Image (cartoon, rainbow, N blue to C red; front, side, top):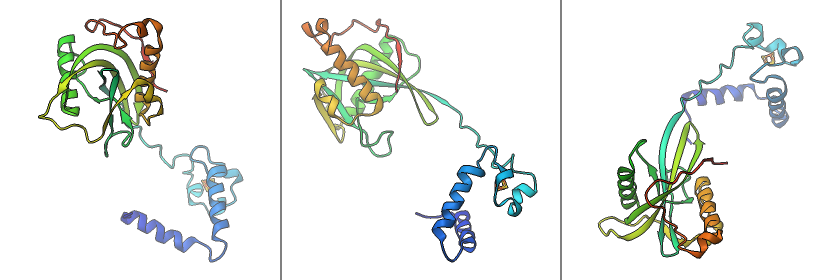
Length: 232
Ligand code: SF4
């Protein structure tokens, strides 16, 4: 890995400080000094074995360095995940390099506009699924809201169900995708929210009232209200 000029200088300085023998013990002692005595908050200078060598202490700076890092600003993000039903299967896509949870499987997921009426929301969901997967779908109902945080992003994930209509051959299929029965999802390496959504679907199809009918159980329009849930 390439090192910055600052890192190179620090390594060079470290080499001048290391003893010729027992480097391992020296390192261990330094790590224990850092974890037991010279902690970032409230260092125990009164008990410190190197207090007489310490320029930080001699200048009275032990309570002001290191300066706490400023917390990054939290950003609210609106996303949607769409469960696409085709016969008794649902569509999963594998998240690609550079995406959050790269390598894991998930329902088609994308950023959406924050406030949309039902008709505009349906259009936006259908268009995003078509562009992301090459499948034309008909959005049917809102299933749940999952709130979760990733690094500095506070994400509200609206989960919807949709019905597969047809393939749009003008758009490529995702590099990796699968049609799976809901019972197969348990064994798949899903993203955190993908797993939560898969469990909701599994609970719904195990509900005898739903099992007797069509397990897609479309709700007319987007009138259903679901309590917001928090991802673990
Ligand atoms: S004397 Fe220096 S090295 Fe020791 S605990 Fe205080 S600040 Fe850390």
